[in-house]
Length: 113
Length: 109
Image (cartoon, rainbow over all chains, first blue to last red; front, side):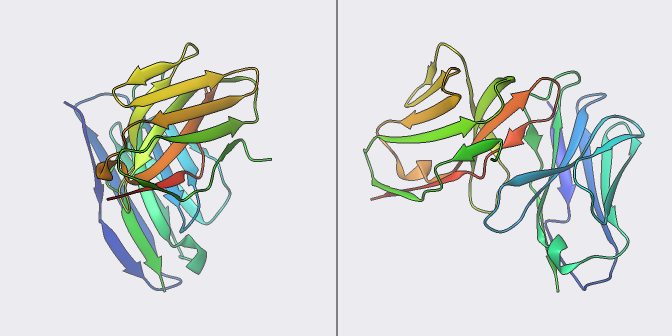
């Protein structure tokens, strides 16, 4: 069966510090991968998605970036965090060719202070 | 206008009640529709897909009205465990899913 791992679960970082969140999927190959953010009281916002290694689509311009160094690994990064980067970050995957059903990781609660 | 809009809630209902959530979408080219459930500080999970003819899964019934660009979710005989936020989700073509902000439901004993 397929599983998705996302870590860490909780992160507290000072403004201006770097960020690296990692997500890996097991039990499937060539998945579509996604990073979402959910700010307090707001809906899920798609940040990045990837249909293959090295292929990243950015939905919202900001100081975040994403990379897919391996087929089942998706990394969200920032060189300098802002207060507005605080939120609940969710990695997700779907089967190749169809993103009709998303399977989410357990999320990372990021607080930038 | 947002692409997916939902009743903001919260809906506070007693156990055993029937509750309905509404959702409208703005893009008539939308093709696929879903309801996801999200518990507090947890990841969203697929509750059910929504088909044109309407579909039922136990106590849950989903309806789609393409003419009015409207989706609904009906929960019968509410349980305490139904307390969660319900997310309306839409897909247009090959673009990624678009999530509504969600409707919060609290079922009270």
